[in-house]
Amino acid sequence: MKKFIVFATAVLINGCGGGSSSGSGSPTDPSLPPINTDSGDVIISDLNISQFTSLGIVTSNSGDLQSVGITNSGNVSIVNPEIGIIPDIDPDFGVITPPACLAFPTIHIQNIDRISDDWRVIKAHVPVHFSQCEFDEYQTKTYLENNGKVYNFPDGYQLDYSYIHNDVKLKVIQPGTTFNKTDNPVLVLRNEVDYEQSVYFLIEESIENGAKLEMLMPNVNISDWQYNDFLYTENEFFYYPNDKVTRKIEVGTGIVLQTWVTDRDESMMTPFKYKGDMYTGKYGDHFIKMNPDGTFGEQLLLPLVEGGNNWAVNHVINDQYIIGDRCTIWDMTNWVEYRVKPSSGGGVTEVVDDKFYCMDNYNSYMGATSFDLVTHQVLHDVDIPSNENTQSSLRMTAPFVMYSDTVDSVYETDHVTINMQTGEKTVEKHFYEGDKVIELKPIN
Image 1 (tube, rainbow, N blue to C red):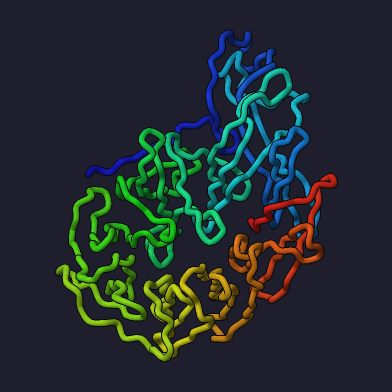
Image 2: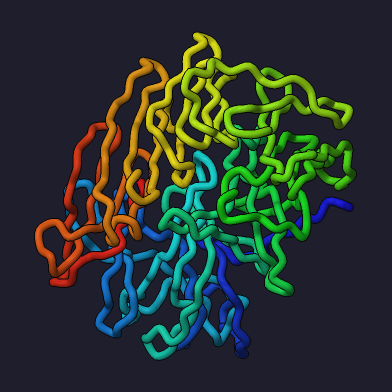
């Protein structure tokens, strides 16, 4: 298989591109904008969300969902992006300032996900055309964003999401993490022709000049629960598990370099690297070496005390900490096990700034724990009441755990946020022009 590269073509205004429209006529002086700007394409250059700590939703006057931002001081305002236009009468002229009569657009940011330290992807319902000083066409578009500035996502591709843990999770493996040792994020995308899943590198250095994709593997089937660990990759090769088989595949050519087949009646877990060797799960708390010749070797010795029936490894930190999918931490340097919270395996784990966060949302086990990997101390451990409201809403974006419940009144649900760094619990109530803000999510 040859390397497949897609270039995003765009008209840029401070980094953002838009669509095209047919039109006729040309300005008398090519250096001057067209006189007639009654209609044209709408181009978003900056979403203006960098000042907000969280986003929410209200209903606009027209009945549409509209995103609002909440600042650290609790001020609420609508998301008001910077826009330009490409006049229909002369689309070749490029992007110009919109007419003064054009009102604020209604923007609904549906998803915002970090794909690296510097970049996020944003899925939003936005205006794409205006006529006679009104926005007359909206579309759901995907943008790449850095500090508010937005750039085109490659045409013909849609992001793929997992619907898991009461949340919508982008299928991405961020660079420089346990399962991605490269400098570029790995994304699962669906093409808009046959809607098949494929795996790509998004080349970060190309984004500002038109984002470029490099295919790793076509026609895959990534499960929802594997949204952030569906393969292990380095620059020259990657490991891809599929049912009872794991293949080592060369990047760019697609050549299968080696194959491992399990004799267990279980699917193989995504392998992880520890001190230069690759390992995969055998059964709970037991992981075996994957030999270079396609066989399996010795079991990885762990400082097991209680264990926790961890079937997979979620994080390997500096070859010191191995962290399982059920909140168990093995300190391989000091030979200590920390079972910071009994877990059903149905939750979420994250490591941010040397702190480990674990949340479980399985019935009566609902709760969250934070653990400092430097001091080896539990920072906070919280139990969350298990009821229909919390079971359907509990989610985590470290360091925040969030859920909805009837707190101040049995007639309405409130948004509850727990900061797992400080232990502070906040019942957040925000209003915009009398309407209650719903579906709060932290963004900065």
